[in-house]
Image: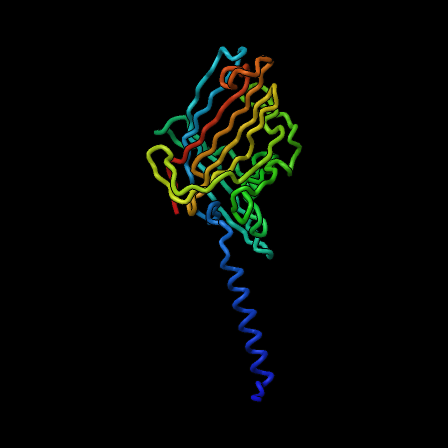
Length: 245
């Protein structure tokens, strides 16, 4: 029987381990659905509807929002922390005004935390797989009251989040995007409140669309659709109009 030198056995073991590690590193976690490279920017057209006066008054506003990653720091555990400049303008031909700085964090390739004011949202989890669930609001008190257009609401009641679907393509405005993941952050009918939040991400691009509805009503006719029952609240739709890679 031929004897294999111990050194050769160690070499085989090393090669085997190296291949296993490489294979694990090459597993597609879906990180590129939420890019975090320095210099990346995204611009959105934002349509907002504010509902007042027992549902009789509905004010519509269009604005434009820009998010630009100014700096990215990498932690020892491969986590990324980015500083994101947030700017807005009221018309397409207007000039952006800086409104604040957000923090986006990708924690150990497991999930993304987006800090908006004092609230930390878990926007996406990895690997990106259909039917995975989590709570996007688990890092703060979801009963928090928030001032929106001069009125106070509890927008984040009972949020339960889900990777709802993957799609081959989706149109947003006049743009066509490929390889889409649809994330349902909330779709909760609580009787006297309705909370809805949906996001769409394109691979290599990032978030291409976000929709949110916060509806309150004392109307007990539960057979009516929420668009009719709502007495106070708001709805927001963001659509990507420009970005870079």
